[in-house]
Amino acid sequence: MRVLLVGAGGVGEAIAAIAKPREWMELMVLADYNIKRAEEVQRKLGDADADRFPVEFIDASKQENIETLAGKYNVDLIMNAVDPIFNKQIFDAAYSVGAKYMDMAMTLSEPHPTDPFHKTNVKLGDYQFDKAKDWEQRGLLALVGFGVEPGMADVFARYAQDHLFDEIEEIGIRDGANITIDGYDFAPSFSIWTTIEECLNPPVIYEEGKGWFTTEPFSEHETFDFPEGIGPIDVVNVEHEEVLLVPRWLKAKRVTFKYGLGDEFISVLKTLHKLGLDNKGKIKVKGVDVSPRDVVAASLPDPAHLGEKMHGKTCAGTWVKGIKDGKKKEVYLYQVADSQECMEKWGCQAVVAQTAFTPVIAMDLIEHGVWQGAGVLGPEAFDPVLFMEKMAEYGFPYGIRESA
Image (cartoon, rainbow, N blue to C red; front, side, top):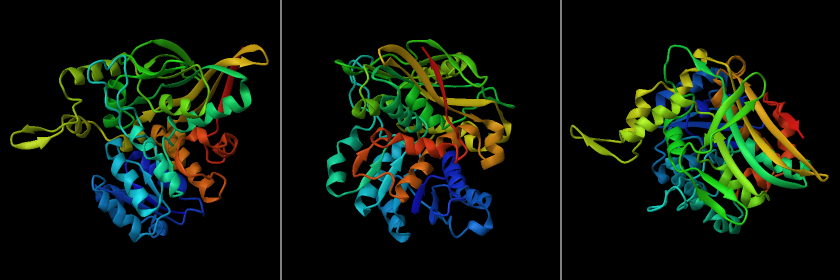
């Protein structure tokens, strides 16, 4: 497979590191706006693999720039590993050149102009799903939401429907961690740009008969007990792709996404919002146009360089409640990544490594003709067993916790 990797940040680096040992990965272009960052990733991969992982400058805001690189390297797939503000250009570029497309976060939402905490407006992924027929008619495949959450979590949801339940009452993604970072009072382990977007937007909930609707940020507090020593964590509603993906393929009476942010993290996000520092639009500061959110991101440490300072575990998983053989049943399918283990194996911190393994496994299954299709498809559209069998092989085994 020949891949154009758009974005050599933390997750992009982890994708390259996990793909490196795989012989089927013929070429992966490390393309980034920050050419020095792409060169850093190339060096970490080793001189022996420099030809397999060439470095290129890319401006992901310019569709023609993406198309030019895709043509130069004759790529099979364009992997989107940048902030979702660039999704439309990368998605459309792949369609234009006839390449497969994959992302880990779908095109952005736009809150309802008058009733944002009750009604949806433009939903996550609407732009992409509106173009699904075009992709299908051309026989092209776009895989959307193929990270860990969304991604692995959606695969788990499909597995639960196919193999564990006769009837599903609720599918709820639950994410929590006990990670600490030495030397920092506040240092997000993932892109702060994306974190602000998904945490401050109105969360979406799905209910059978009602469809998609929104609620206020950080609503419906719940204590969820995470496995492998992480323990009980307060989780809250957050806008996330699973809620938009799962109901398109699976039958559940309710779908939610809840994230263990912690009181301090929520307080910081609320403060950023009050000060207008979450704003994506540019303002003029001493004659220079800048985005307040970009300034916040630039002021915080780069998550890609926090690995040696991180300790603890992060857990991503799918909690499902329903009926099997006439009896009530609950399961939690999950994956736990340990910070130090990920650094030892991949040279990448746990959060980005856990996000990166799903797209690489998906590439593997596509390259070998195991997963096939055309159109705009989420993880729920594919056989989950084949993916889950490969998780341990790739160093990210799953677990299942069941309770009656």
